[in-house]
Image (spheres, rainbow, N blue to C red):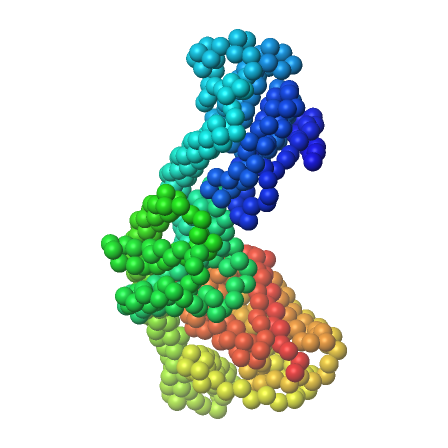
Length: 581
């Protein structure tokens, strides 16, 4: 049979592959033997001498090359050749020796066993070849009869097998050394268990090029010694896809039995390997590997070393997670303590501000209530002492002052009562469908005298698309009176405007004045209770500081919104937005 393969550099080589007899029943791959000789008879005699040859239940696979150049191409395509029988004199007098240097130095193949087999010893003396070239044996073609050839091949393959095992063990130990830091740097149990399976499967398949091992499916199962429960943490191979639940449950059952000191390994497949993960001789989990029948004792020892390293890393990871959880708990407690401290400080400041505001409110109220009361008492005594028919006109004017002072006093009391109801949640809402124009006329009749008293021009703009509104008229009336009276109070020789418009969804009441306006700082405190736009020492503008706070809270109760924009010495504008229904 001829087989042509293409190498990575684009060149091709013809591989003449022959068997050594009948097919072996073994599923293991054959040992590859390369015969390099320019004589066809040598190839034929070698095949006949090794007919039906088997070593460790593995047959031979012969690869044939009739020149050093042809052998090089085969070697590039077949890196796992076990033995090469090389003639010296072929296309050149030293073609075989050059091939040996190529294998050892350029290809860096040191596991392959190289045997020089020459028919012209004079061209390549034995002592000189053995000293100068890295070969494993030197034979004359005449001495390699069938029995000698058979013996040589067994010894050579045994040597190759031992070297291959040593190389696999060396790679395995290096892999373990490389894997251990990864175990110790895992950030989570999931990452750790996935890494354990990945490294163990990789360790079992270090002989993949020679197809010695075929472990590719496994599980990592953790155990709770107190509850005697097992949990599957990770799976690979067929267990990573969609494993049959009954198979996984069978493995878990075996693990749980081992936790109890019972043995039921018979329930597992004969080729399965179950290794406990132990911390201080206490099992905390198990590693389950399938198709591990072909693992030799050395490979099992290496797997055990890897598992021990995994157990140590798992203990460190658990300690790390415990410390991390404790640290997070401590940080959370510190954060909560800091938050509680900040909240306590805020509460203390708010209580202090409220206390100051209440003290200021009581001082203001004392002044505000005393002024109209003194006027009422004074004018009452004056009328009582001096009332005569001649002074009747003057008495009427004094009675008007008494009436105005009484109304002012009543308004102050009403504000305090309204705010008290709002704060305690006792403010009632009485909704009713009422015409809009009569309500506004009533408000204007009450407010116009106050506006004109300070020589202000009043403008009323009414352009809504609706004629009625469903709301609490008492609270709406109170809001408008507060806004208009404030506009009149803080404006002199200026203009006060009430504009009423509407959209499909709401009615907008806009009260604008050209009065003293406010600073940005004053606007920030505008709707706070007991806060006043007049913060001067002389207190030219009297009041409790509750009006706008009440207006805003009433607007929220009615489902609306009250906004303000103002500029110092350029007036203010308040807009009340109320839903139509």
